[in-house]
Length: 200
Image (cartoon, rainbow, N blue to C red; front, side, top):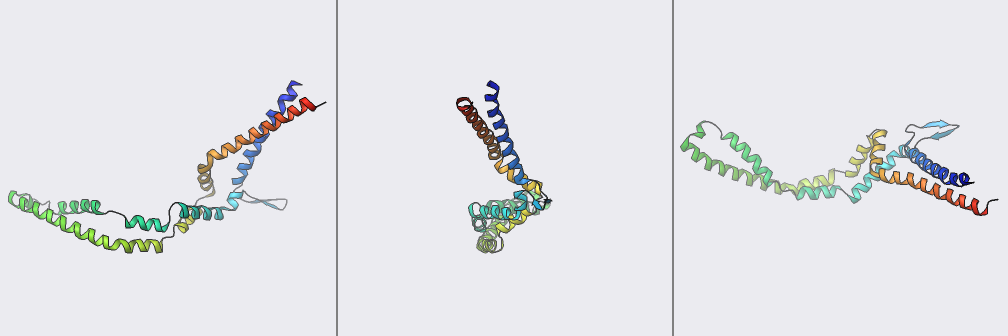
């Protein structure tokens, strides 16, 4: 009698866990469709891959990153420090000849280098500031984040696509498996209690 009461929760937990485990695997497998008695069998996610890719891309563009966001980021870029560093490297390289390292000439060249670096940096920064708006507008008009994402996702092979999705929801999928086991266990407990109190 004791064993008959103990078994239903254990069997129920095993069946519940296994059912959810198989159901989750069937979301992704089989990757390649095949026919069984006239039925076309394929995992739900591989079958609807393009729709899922579009949905992911649409959500990312709407909630996280859009062409408008890229344009704003470009407009807000501060190029000055990087330009100063680049100009300094170029000028130092051009003024590094032995002739310019002579004491008197060197003093003149230091002042000259500073002037050249200042003028070049100001000119380049001013020019880029004028062009930022136009560059941002081109980004806004010509870059479609959603299309880029759809193309990128669509180029993934099915194994990598599956890994991409499961990486995002791995913990939730594990919780579903365990939940199946818990539900099966509880059903088994109720079954055992019913048998104990109302069984013949």
